[in-house]
Structures are given as structure tokens and as C-alpha cells.
Image (cartoon, rainbow, N blue to C red; front, side, top):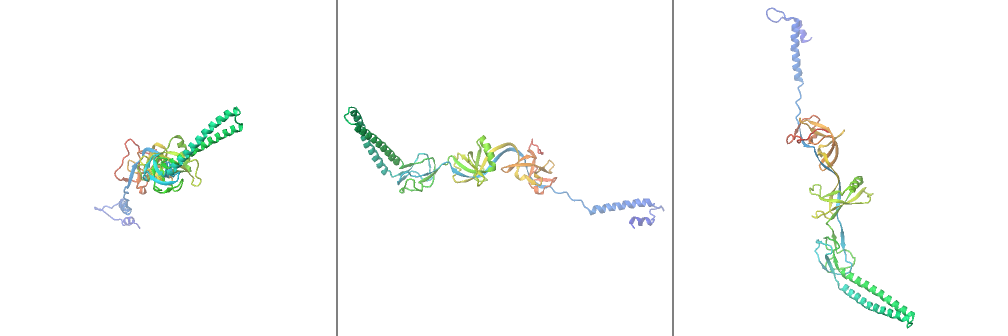
Length: 400
């Protein structure tokens, strides 16, 4: 039996003046009281949840800028020319005319080898030439006389022929003597060794007083040409068609960096493309040429190479950390004017340094979340660290 039924069954008489409260009025009054009690009880049993606090995030603005297409590789610096300086004659090394490590110019005197044996050989060759020239001149005169006498039958034809043969033989001897003189001069000239190219000398490998042999090992010194200089690197076969296409149109710029944090790269141009793909590595060898006037590049040095094929002038760029990947592809969280997080699907392109090209999804000026995305959900209120960064003036922040 309910509370309402108990109250009604008692036919309670209420009020003053002997008036009886009617059953319908009692029913309505008690119903209202019980309804209020039930409402209060329900409210006390299920308290309302407090609103969620805003999520602290860091934001950045998407911007339009230049987005170069860059092929990166590891390269090694090598000299444009490298020469092992060796002696072409044997003898004692009398004098070294430079200090190891010096920069030398082409034709500069480097070494002197004892010249006395070669001076004597030259004088001997010149003396033999003088003797044979005199004999050849006398044979020419004899030939002329015999030619006249044979016409008058004063000498036989055989004697005239013999005179002609002697003149020809002595002329050949003179030619051989001249060659011997030239060889002697060549050897004497090579007793003084000059720099075949301009460049920087390395360690001195043979010291003064040592006996050197023609073409013997080790070389006297090694000269590397440093200005200009080359960087050799390889690109994957998949990138080669684009390299080939753009290299045919213009001279491609190349940058060499000593490390990933190098802020001032050395700038050069692509100068060589190999004529085949290395089947063992699937790469193509390229070379870039650098003026290297400040000598930042050194032979044997490893560098990071950036080959720029082309550049997109007006691309939309966002920090790379703002781009996330989900089941439906890539997306970013943007912040609208009400401070609410919006999950925006985008098509992300290539990376340019620490930024990523957005091909479709947002335009320049959008506020994208770069830190704190892990706590966000679509519609979450955000608290921007460092203040509410507003979109740049004149730039919309909506999707495109």
C-alpha cells in the first residue's frame, strides 16, 4: 500500500471550522509533494559533470613560401686534379725549393737533381753532332764533284754512286746526333723539377740528399688542386630521371654542408653525370664543382649534398610536427576563432627542411597545433601557450 493510499483511507479531517477536505484535493496536494520529493532525490543521486578544462597547446601559422625540390645525398670531396710528382731522371736530390704544405703555382721550381752527369752528356752529344756535321758537309762536296766528273767520264758511275751513299749516310748520322742532343737537353732540363699544376703540396716524401730513380716509388710529393674542387656523390636510380630532365634544361645548383646543423653551405653547380647506373648499388654517380676560394672543402672530406632540381614559389608550408597520420590519411589540428580544436584532413607533400608542403586542406594563415595534439579531440577547447596567436592580417585561416 502506498503512502497516498494510506492517507486517503483514513478520511482525515483537516482544517478548522469542521470543514472536510475533499478526496480530490488531498490527492492533488499529496501528489505534488511526492513529485517534489522525487525530483529532489533524483537530483541528489546524479550530480552534473563539471566542464573539461582547456588543453594547453602550442600553435604556429601556416605560411606561403618557396619550396625547393631537393635531392639529398652523402658526398666525398676530391681534387679537380691530383698529381704525383716523380723524377724522370735519376740522381741525387740536391735541393727542395718549397716547404711541404705550400701552395704552388704551375711551373714553379720544386726540386733540383744533381745536373753534372747530364751536363756532360749534353756536351758529348753536341761534340758528336759537330763532328758528324763536318763530315756530312764534306760528303756533300764530294758528291757534287763526283757528279760533275762522271759527266766527263773522269770517274766511273760506281764511284759517283758511292759518293752519294756516303753523303746520305752522314746526313742520317747528323740527324741521329741531333736527336741525341735533344735527349741530353731533355734529361738536363728534368734535373730541375717544376710543378705541373697549381695546387697545395702534401708531405715531402723524399728529402734532400737521397738518391732518386726515374719513375721510382714513392713520388717526391703529391699536389692536389683545391680551387676549384669537386664533390662526388650518388643518387638513387628512382631520382635519376628527374635529375636528367632538369639538368638538360639548366645548370642545377648544389649545396655542400659539413653537418646537418651547418647554416652556411658551400654553393656550387652540377658538373658531371655518369654514363651508367651502378648495378651493385642501383645508384648514379654525379659530381658538383665548387669554386672553393675560401678553402672550406678539403680532399677526402665527407659532406652532405643537396641538389636542387626546381622550386615551387608559392607553396603552403606548416611545421612538420603539426602533420599527423590517422586511419584516413594525414591531418592537422587547427584552432578556430573561438579557441576550439578542429581536425582538418590535409594532403601532405614533401618536406622542406623542418616544414612540410600542404598540397590540399588548409590555406596560409591557419593556426595549426604543433604540440599537445595527443590530448586533443575534435571540439576540444584549447589554451594556447604564450598567448592566443591570431592569424596574420590579410590571411584567412580556413580550409581550402
